[in-house]
Image (cartoon, rainbow, N blue to C red; front, top):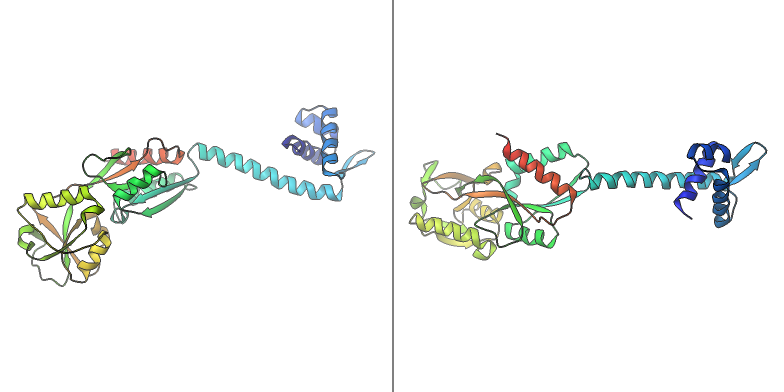
Length: 296
C-alpha cells in the first residue's frame, strides 16, 4: 500500500465517481480504477458499492475513510511542522545558565524577546555552572549556555559576550557594618565563605589575584560549590562572601549587599555554543542575542 493509493481512494470517496475524481486530480480513469482495485485486493474487502450512477462507500469503506483522513491530516501537519523546524520556527532548544544570570537583566529579557517572536518554540533551561555547561555543549547535551567566561576558554565553543557584571560584598544582615560602600581591607579580618578552586579554576584564580593586588588575604572558613550555597551560609551568619552583582536581582532576605570601593572584577556574562550545532532554533536565538547587544 502506497500513499498514492490512499489519496486516490480519498478523491473517489469525495466525488463518488471515478470520472470526476480523475478530472480533479488529473489522473486517467483507468489508472485510478486500477489503483483502487489493487487497494481493495490488498485490504481483502470492498471499499465501494458500484451503483448505476456513481459509487457509494461500504460500511467498511466509511470506517477506512475516517481513519485515512486522520492519517493524511497527521501527515500534512507533520510536513508543515518539519518545515517550520527546518526554518527555525519550531523545535526544542536546550540552554544552560548560571542561576544568578536568570533573575534579572539580559538573560530573562532575551528569553522573553525570543518567545515573543517564536511562541511555538520550546526552551528547556538547566541551571549548571559555567565549566559544566561548556562540557555539556561540547558533548551535545546542551545547545548553548549563559556562562561567565574568564580568559581564553580551553574549549572548541564559540562565545558571545553579552554584558559585564561586577562583584560585591555579601554579609549577614545581622552584622552591624555602617557603610553601603566599603574597602575590602576593612573587612578582610572577618570570616569569608568561598568556593573550591576545582569548581571554576579560572574565576578562582581571578578572584584571589584581585585580592592579592588589593593587598588582602581573605580569612576563608568554609567553601561551597555554588553561589546559592555560599549565600545560604552568609544568611546563617557563617561569614561574608564576594559574589556576583547579578545576585542583587534576587537578594536573600537575611543578606545585605555592600559595594566594594577600589575593588572590581569584570564578570562577563556570555553565551557559548558549538558552531557545528545544526539546531535551526539556535541560529535564531543567536540573532536575537546579537540584536539585543546592538540596542542602546
